[in-house]
Amino acid sequence: MSLIFSHLYKTENMKKIVWVLFLFSCVAIISKATIIEKNMQSIDTPKGAWQLLQGDLEYALIAADGYCMVAQFDKNNKKFIGSYGGPFKIENNKWIVDVQFHTLDKTLVGKPAIFDWKPQKNKVVTNISGTPAEWTQTDIGGKNLEGNWRITQRKQEDGKMSEIPLRARRTLKLLSSSRFQWAAINIETGEFFGTGGGTYTFKDGKYTEQIEFFSRDNSRVGASLTFDAKIEEGNWIHSGLSSKGDPIYEVWGRMK
Image (cartoon, rainbow, N blue to C red):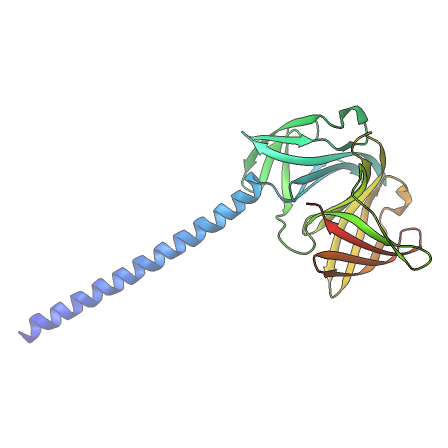
């Protein structure tokens, strides 16, 4: 009898071991599937930063808070070529932009621009640049100052803060986890007043930009600017010296 019970005991233990191993396998499969799903979500519901290189030309796309900006430039030769942007959505593998600014053709402002959007792992095939091409995702967002911001207050020379209400003419700053682009625009008239962008870091209260394109002054390309920065009550407090060396103190709020 003892041999029988011993055999049964070993059999039951083996069943438990097999069951535990099965559970661990399930957890591993589910975890892997979740990671894959998250990566696909970042592509199917685009956010973060994307890049396309064509010789000396570079295209940079930032998507955050349902808003996007696309810029074309030649960083090595310090040339800004063009940019456009606005609120966007994805429907049936189509990227649909409600154009709010277009530096090359202001008659496109207020009209929808429709592009192909075909996800392939961490890449996507799209004709956002004008022709079908494979773009690479350079960050998936979700940290730092990611979002669509607009300037809401600015300190004047007398030290007083002036309110900047939301109007047709506005200055926006769109950030992923690693890239930024600002644009001064008028969404009603189609007027464009300037844009610039590149990469940034935000650490220990310091916000540092590396400028890769600047429509107003190509000589600023390659410059690094550092500002004091902090988030208070959902606002981004930004202070330091501008690209011209002028002191600035600004408050930025997220676009609703």
